[in-house]
Image (cartoon, rainbow, N blue to C red; front, side, top):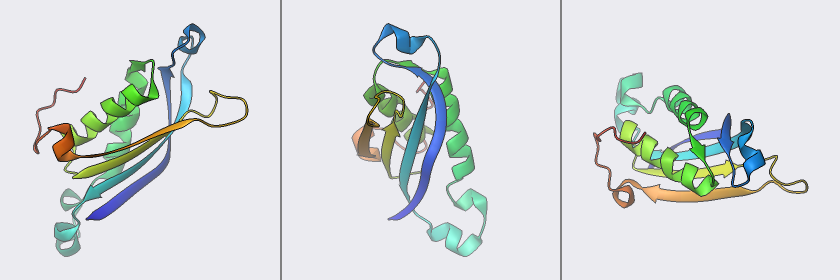
Length: 129
């Protein structure tokens, strides 16, 4: 399986368990590793045959900015559903870091899912928001 990586995607969103965390957006850093198939793009050299990582990055940012979650884990689930619904990928590895949550460390969550685990066929019904 071929892979596209997007590293250190910067987003701001309202997220957190504590009341004070919902007063203003907080920065997050997102890494994505997307399993896909480059075979058609090898031959065509055409964007519709590849994974459009600019569009994918923009959609993840839009989703995060519009969302309100208590847990990074829940945000992970929403991002996974978005990606598998809108993009032809077979797998997603996702890391979300919350750099301002702790004084002496940067907490993060990491998850990996394949399309079958999510139960979303391609092309998918767009029912994630």
